[in-house]
Length: 238
Ligand SMILES: [Zn+2]
Image (cartoon, rainbow, N blue to C red; front, side, top):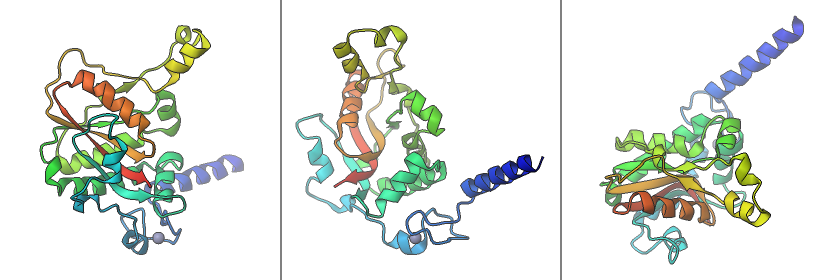
């Protein structure tokens, strides 16, 4: 009985911690009444890209040159090893913090909303996680980021346009080389026929090599041959 009570208390405090996170993600200082996941000091010190002020192509624009044509790109934070963006991305991926994804999604949405180049966006498409990964994590951080942006821009999320392919037994029994090819990121649309969207943005948490996004964009070009495709990410690796 005592053991059950201890377990219950641990579970309860874990749950409360998730619902009311008390510590700053970055410096670990207690932020009792702050509505954010980050304390005011660290908030002031976030590593912004300031891409919204650029008149020249950004590093993120250049990353996709010669790979896929993108209409616009935007990333809010700069990610470098050990900088203040790292604990934010880590919390999204490994620390079971959907609240952090929602919080930064809204912040990202505020930034996107201020930029005229995104004013004609009519849908957001989160980069899908492998379903098994999503099951283990409990959420897809890109989906939650997209929800935050969508709440600012008042546009829909179209996850149905990009689903990660789940492998069947028969596919994995194929030759080793073919199997590797199959294991590469594969995405499919669940929508049959043409979709009338003019400007969509694929949403991701962090862009490093850009290869996943490149694959996503290629797939979307088939479903949306007439749409302008953009990329919006919380962070970009330097
Ligand atoms: Zn802090």
